[in-house]
Image 1: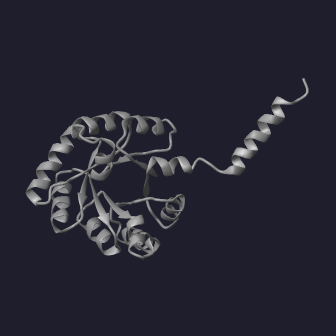
Image 2: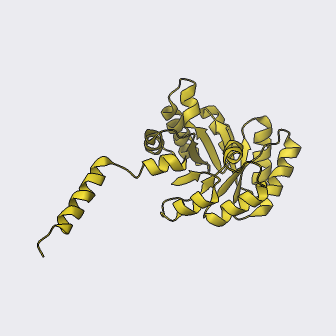
Image 3: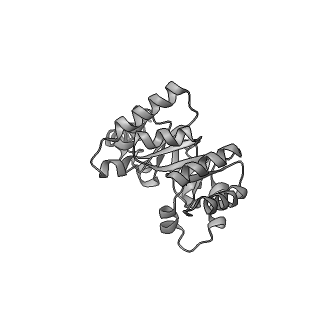
Length: 216
């Protein structure tokens, strides 16, 4: 599946009309860039209204109690749609486990290694988010991380689904899917690049020109 990595309701609505997107992910960086000083609840409700499927909303609190309180507030905005995005760590694992026992879906985020993804899955994460671009920034190949995580989830029949994010190139999408990601969350700019191939454009022009110049 493909999710859209955006918080812009207008763009989300436009892209969902293509019929290829199954959910939305947001994060504090995206919201800060795209929404600025907008009210968070108002913005997320607009994202939910413009889309279908799960909408991930990330926690920004850093202590377990505050994270749980924040998570319950976000979840109440759209209980059937909002997935709580939990930053990985000891507190994050505790929060993930607690939310899972309450039937609240989670997306454990900022994962850079197999070990982290495996722990997140064992804690009950609905999704485990591996950051492709940031793993590569450290000089490592992300493909084995994705493949090893998928193999372990399948072997132990764990319910978590792998989301691969931090997508910077079309090739990142292709490699994530071919190495076992259940979902790739793609920024709108990369998704639009996936539309184009010069040979496709050339062929369409050729066909249209032939039709326009046919004998009448």
